[in-house]
Image (cartoon, rainbow, N blue to C red; front, side, top):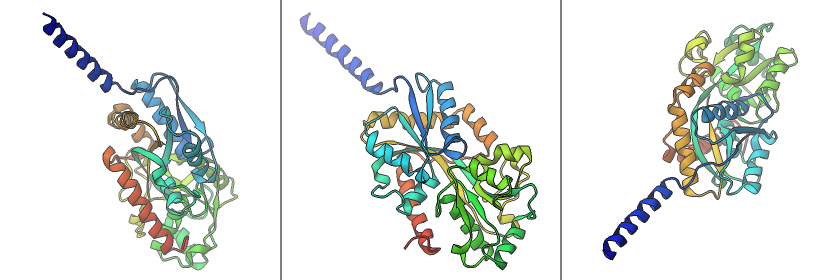
Length: 328
């Protein structure tokens, strides 16, 4: 009898331990999502839209609070995460190709991609080149022809720092169009895409370089004219009227993935929880609707491959930056 009871107790304890292990981590209380920019722009969009869907899917116990932390093209948020939030398993940080671009160009002094945990991506946001509704340029070729005559003829505004991903998209398109002397193309950096677009619409800057999700509001209001989307094919739905650069004879593609990293020092079960949460979010009908409404295209590497993808993209952007003279 004693042996039987002992066996039952051991079995019950093992079952409880297994259940405990399976539920080893769940977020408790409020989750924070750092958007490395002011309100408006792609990182802010990522935090707020993902936060809403995480709440709808009951993947967080309460709310997801967006914390705007602008500065240094994402460098302030990255440094904050590395130096002050190590081990914080209640924190997500919005990231994108803009983040990997800065890392590739050593723009976060003393820091590298290994200092955080890369969780996953929730779609790709394609680059655009746009002008105000009153601009004399009506297609991408007209704009590029002006730049061929004089690389300084068109002044661009974007939400990344000089040499960042928004800047690189212009250079990629200009190089494909045959524009010479790429370093002379004027580019003005703003804290986010919303601020950059305001400058273009106000007539202070000639053209905007950013991502399609950033431009939704100004596009619907008619204040912004998108000359080209930097995708292989036209985007779906309401965005299908926007021509690609490729169909205008300029072989330029600029996808910007959107996703997250979390601090180093968190337990493996917390990393797994957030990777699984991103997987569930991406597969949900709610997120598919967000993607459709905002021009996001499918992009979701397996969680066990996302870290390798990030590291490879950093290498690729580093090579591109060296090729066009942005870094040595």
